[in-house]
Image (tube, one colour):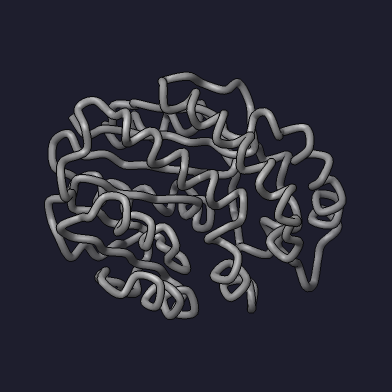
Length: 255
């Protein structure tokens, strides 16, 4: 990420509607998984960022093992503060070090898009190999190349994806898709309109790109947006699919 972006992420990710909506999607889906996630599972957050998801996993799942790695030392400093009970270390999604096996659950949220699928594929295969039979990989990725904007430049996103592309990725990894859908469908028109200026700037070239996180909505708007995502997530957790959205969300199970 560009300098300063991890500090902004660490400051806003606990309450920001986008991050809270993603965590809600993950755990609503896992709560309805069949077969269920084991009691006190072993969990790895592959690309843990500044650590809010690790903190949430620790509270919700009470894992017997919780690990997380990230390539950015700036992010790891925040993660260690937020999740002091987790094993947090520097690592790369392309060549991941896995310090505990087997794993029941691997989270990989908006990480593969930074190096890209081709570079990440060997590392993803290594992560899947570390899953026990029945273990799950949860992925979230930004959708649609044409939605590439200044935010992507700031956070070093290399690629954006489609549902079909993630389906193909799961086939390569030998995973059974339990959920595969777009997210932020109901908010998609607003997302596109809000990103138009940044989309134009990204195509012109930007010397000092800034992420969307620098503009935080007020409490009422934030609560409203989080509520819309909660409705979307309830449908996803029940097995529903949304036809479009600004993210692709998928859960794959190892046979």
